[in-house]
Every structure is written in structure tokens, then in C-alpha cells.
Image 1 (cartoon, rainbow, N blue to C red):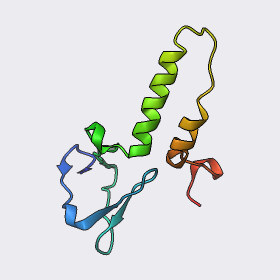
Image 2: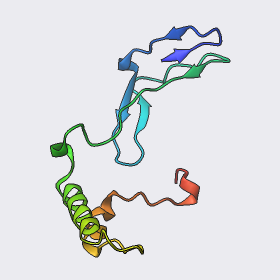
Image 3: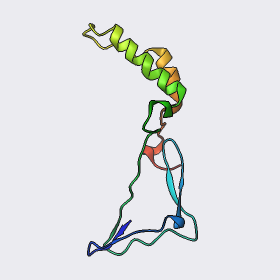
Length: 108
């Protein structure tokens, strides 16, 4: 949606853009020649939902397993007053979901 400097909202037709799916950095790209022009003094507002889905079954199996393992770990050590390290099994399951940032998170 585009909003001009007077606050008038302009719906952008979804056929002019496409979402390039990525776990860490999804991108809006022009489906045609270019994306819609943002009016001078206006703004672009993008609404999106993030995550794997609304249901537990939408999670990747290794991430769901890591969550269960971490919950069991915290339950087992619930009386410890110090911090306990994350179990290595959990770390190895979630490694592929970690975002490695180079150059202050900017594009390469």
C-alpha cells in the first residue's frame, strides 16, 4: 500500500510485485519493469506475516525437536540458580536456522 503526503491510501496491485522467499531475508521484487513509485512525501506500508505457520505441524521437524529438547532441559534443571549452557544437541539442530551476519547485516 502506498500513502501519499495527504494520507490517501493507494492499494498496489499484487501482480506488479513478487515475494522472493528466504528464511532470513525475504525480498520484494518487481514482477514487471519496476515496483510502484513511492509518492513524494509519501510512504510505502508493507504488511506481512512471519514465521513457519500457525500450527506446530508447520515447524520443520528438527526445529520442533530442538524446542522439545530445550524445554526438557530447562525442566530438568529448573532448580539450578546459575545459568546452564544450551545442550549441544539443541545447538546442532538449530544451527541451520541461525542468521550469520557479515558487514553489519548489510547485503553482500
